[in-house]
Length: 562
Ligand SMILES: *Cc1c(COP(=O)(O)O)cnc(C)c1O
Image (cartoon, rainbow, N blue to C red; front, top):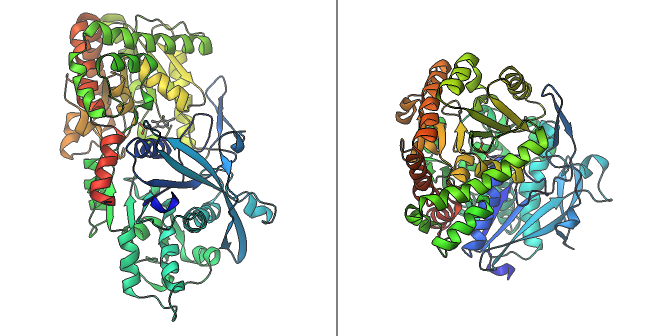
């Protein structure tokens, strides 16, 4: 069975179950959806990540929106099974033992993709090494590099120890796993009598590797001083290879993966272009992200089961949503909305109303996502609610513990909520995670997204909304450039982004947002059949395409070619 696995998927975070805090945001959710679709499609994959014993963090929010972070308490053995194998990696000359916990992802037809979560919390290890698999994106650069040693090098060794000997492709989901290239190179060198490294070895490693980049901002790419890299990893002849392992005194994990992969892609068409500009001279393709149908609410699932049998096995058939009667689409969505409104009211006591247009905005709280773009002109918002029609807003999202501006953003939304209380209800649900995400994307009427172009590589929550029949009102960036058909699948904020003219004046986006919002409110209250048609098209045009089933098929054909 292990011999049949041909694809190894490596990701620093993987979101599989809400109660397993092994992810922080979009990257991990995408990894989870990818693995689920691989299981559905019987792609012979195995996946590797770190255990994250203390998770990312549990978020509490004070009265004024101040974020309080706590370690997440969870028991890995409630979800996973400990494997007997042990492997070792070397960190700063110390031997660090690594074990793995197996989680089995079952596809729709019962096919299993095993996911191994690596763990260094073993008695034999030094105290500082035992904590290496505790915090996702925690502590400092040194900690991160050590984690990447465990993931990349430890991950390959663990797969070998588990008997995965037929792996043809190693897929790095972002640069955190790039050190796996070093281990693949070392495997070849160790197998030779003279222990030398040649350009053929590099070519052979390249043939095995696939790299997906996710970040259109230079600062988002992991890099380490060569001095730190040398100290943690020990001396290696590869480090002398300027332009492969080392660029200007740093080990840049993105360049490492770019140099040692035969196939590289960005995560939306626009992100492919942006990446080609950022990394000149590299061949970079694009495979647009998707989502798995696990994000569809129970009521919408039941609706599709009635009208589109087999839609789970064949997401493309969601195109037939156009022929589902409008009343049924609206009724199924209303059931999901009821659940969300009940939850919001239980949790916040804000008195959200079923009949009021509800907008959702939930994602990591970080500056470029501009969660506060809507609040630039509170009087304008009040007038919209009074003159055109009422609306209410649901927010949620965590800020990285070191992202002070992201934390300030949450406080600004709390402040806006207080300020606008007389005319617009604004709820902020704490501790954003998968369960809340699913309830919000399915239960709101319109999904709001306001990133600063071109910073949103893809974005996926709007895709989750679409598969639930919820149209997006979004800045044209990431996937929305491909998914937006005005007044048919949703609405664009700032038309000009589509042609690569990235908006520099945020006030223009704010102005455009108010205009479009006015249009959407009018449509919602005055033209319900038009609004329903847009819901149907969100499912038929976007749900049928922006899914990980289509995405996985593209990876198989373009990157894995099994
Ligand atoms: C889908 C999802 C994300 C990613 O959202 P974006 O649209 O990429 O910002 C982040 N966190 C959770 C919990 C999610 O479910």
